[in-house]
Image (cartoon, rainbow, N blue to C red; front, top):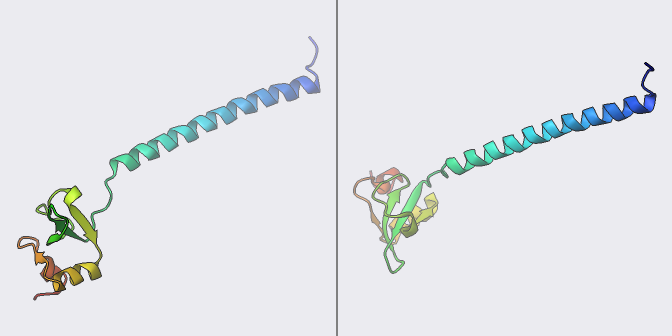
Length: 108
C-alpha cells in the first residue's frame, strides 16, 4: 500500500478542520440560544418609582417601584427620582402603604 500523497493529506486535513468548525459553530448556536432563553426569563428591573395613572391618563398616585398596589403595568409610568419629587410637589397623592414620600425624603 502506498503512502497518501501530500495533496490527499491536505484534503483530509481540510475535511477534518471543516468538521471541527461545524462543531464550534454548533456550540456557538447553542450558547446563543441559551443566552436568549435566559434573557426572556429574566424580568426587567423594577423602576425605583412609578406613578399610577387614572383611566383618563392623569397621574393618580405615586408608588415605590415594587409596591403591589401600583395597579397594572399598563396603567403605571416609571419615574426618575426628580420626576417623583416633582409629582409630589404638584400634588400627586403618595401611596399610604409603600410611602414614597418618606422614601424620597419628602416627609420625615
